[in-house]
Amino acid sequence: MYIKRDIEPILLDQIKRKEILVLTGMRRTGKTSLLKWLFNKIDSNNKVFLDLQNILDQKIFDEIDFNNILLNLKSYKISKNEKIYFFIDEIQFLPQVTNSIKYLYDHYDIKFVITGSSSFYLKNLFPESLAGRKVVFDLYPLVFNEFLRFKGIELELEKEFNIKAESKNIIEHERINKYYLEYLKYGGFPQIVLENDISQKVFILKDIFNSYFQIDILTLSDFRKVDALKKLIFLLMERIGSKLDISKLASQTGVSRDSIYSYINLLEGSYFFHFISPFTKNKDREVSGTKKIYICDTGMLNILSNVSDGSLLENSVFLNLKKYGEINYFQKRSGLEIDFIINKSIGIEVKKTGDNSDIKRLLKISNQLSLKEHYLISQNFLEEDKSICAYQI
Image 1 (cartoon, rainbow, N blue to C red):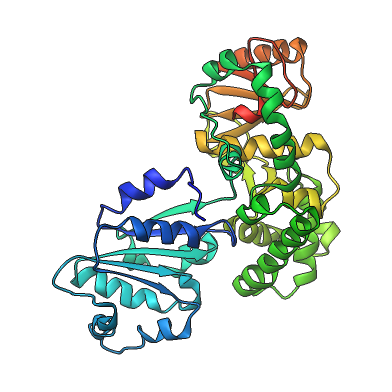
Image 2: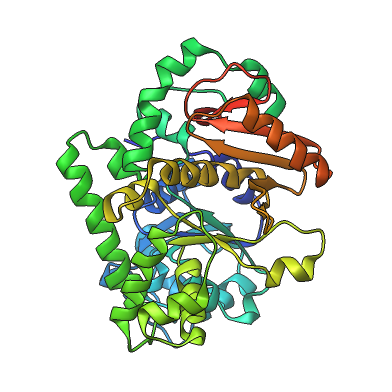
């Protein structure tokens, strides 16, 4: 059973365009299901779906003369005399196929749609010669409104934050909050959301992490100190919502600062961790500023690390805010801070149970930074004008 994802309209628009469409992200986020859905949406019989985990599908590309690849598709009744829709799943299993894709793209009327795990791998897999020939979209675990859809509940979210604040109501909060608590605890990987057995949820989450580490990380990296890399992952989990301290992490893992930077680059490029920069209107300072840490999924965080409810909530809000644009944070040495600043104009503070004093403090800092809007996001329901329920994000 396929359940709708929010990215669908974007992909349907992109399927009309010439460029190679690449869909990437962590394992088990639903890329194959989405690819099959998109394949079935194509109003043409001149289309083919190949899974490169299948050795027989790999053999189709085993040609010195790339023109012969199309001859190998005769059994699929593919004609090169009309537009071909070429869907390729799990491209990382045959990285050399990019050479033939480039040739076929340049010489035939073919729309390629491709999936593969890990942006770090895919963005280095495609040669520079494909620049301008591809568009890349990232697929993440479910955001909360997608989570509800998987539970059979449609929740229409307001796009503007001021309308979110005005439209909240206690009855909807009471109805939805129990689902949000489950989302915080077990996260948004589709398989987890659809699984009802708690012990199975935990088992699958651990399996997703092990698959990520054993397949993606160990395949992508040539790092010799694998134990240090794994230790770093768990150290970063303990610091969710905190600023990176590279020197301390290097000391705790027993590797150099340069190695820590390399590990972090890999962990970010493979979608496991996200890092946000401090708020500043000076771009150079933003790039060089100390970054804060968030993880791809609260379920993963909850099962694999001992973190507070507040950290889970802040991480969840971050994951659901990403769709609104650029995210920064603000923190002064005096202790004044704003958890998130969206598009350099909207200040967001996150509290499990906030109050009016939190909103007043947020207003003061927002005015100092010349932000246009400010809101307190609370897990528990608040009546205050500038408050938004966490599930509304």
